[in-house]
Image 1 (cartoon, rainbow, N blue to C red):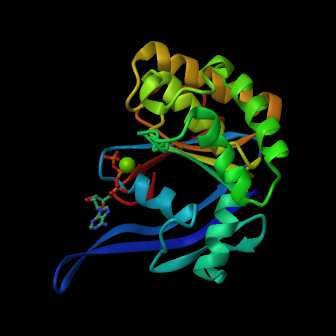
Image 2 (image 1 turned 120 degrees about the horizontal axis):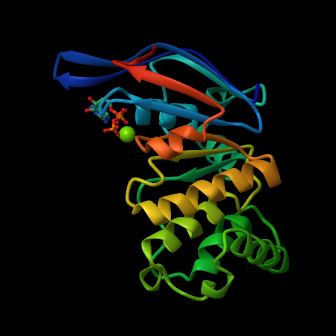
Length: 222
Ligand SMILES: Nc1ncnc2c1ncn2[C@@H]1O[C@H](COP(=O)(O)OP(=O)(O)OP(=O)(O)O)[C@@H](O)[C@H]1O
Ligand SMILES: [Mg+2]
């Protein structure tokens, strides 16, 4: 298992002295080289769980191991370094840096890893080709369509060859034609690069791509 989460609890403060329990003893194993999909009603706790599994947020209790490393044993600096080198993220909104081109948005995390300019630009070019937008390399996000922006975001997520790509509603902001392109891309990346995905989605077509589908309700898997 590439990721193992055990007995995760998470609550948020509701008022000054009351809490609302969001995740209640959630455990999960993520299979390598597969697409695992998490579905469930709005407010079920899916994004909260994804943030914890990827080290963006901390649980109240429980452990998350990625490749046998306990990610909450890291300090903040180690954890952000681990995230940058081992994990990739795709969100509903692309979160690309507006003042940089598509190519630069992909290169930046590679350069942060300490790779040379040459290595970064080679990898960036390969990724832009792989997601089908090599000819848009020099466009800024505002000069790209929504579908293209999201494909750049996928390329950026893959920049450092992550162990796992976490995607939260990656097609939530796309029309059906662009969603379809993204679905095909996920399948291609799984098959060609053996990429492991954890995807949260409401999109029935994207759910179908899951090798494993987990349904969450009121903070537990059912
Ligand atoms: N920082 C926070 N503080 C307080 N409550 C929060 C916080 N983040 C999330 N919640 C609450 O936790 C619950 C679960 O939220 P979460 O975002 O995980 O749901 P979700 O399953 O991703 O829903 P959606 O499908 O709408 O994205 C919601 O009731 C939400 O209001
Ligand atoms: Mg959510």
